[in-house]
Length: 76
Image (cartoon, rainbow, N blue to C red; front, top):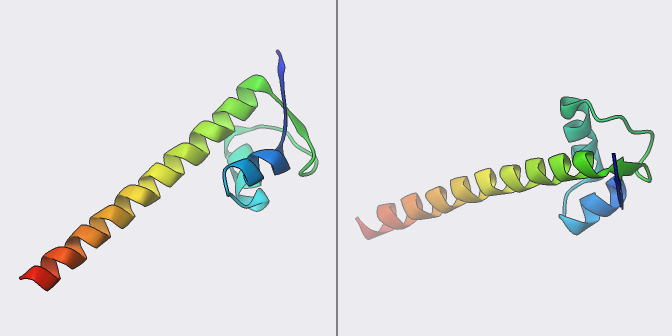
C-alpha cells in the first residue's frame, strides 16, 4: 500500500472542505486517523477525494436545479 503523502488537513484545504467533514468521510469509510496531520494511504486519499467530489457535484446539481426553478418562476 503506497502513501499519497497527503494529510487530512491538506485534502480539506485543496478541496475547500472543512477538516471535520473529511473526518466524517473517514469515519463513514472506515479510514483510521489521529488528527488533521494524519498522512493517508493512496487508496484512502483517493476514496476521500472521490467522496468530496461526489458531494460537491450533488450540491452543485441541486443548486443549479434551484436556479432553474427560480428562473422559470420569474419568467412565468
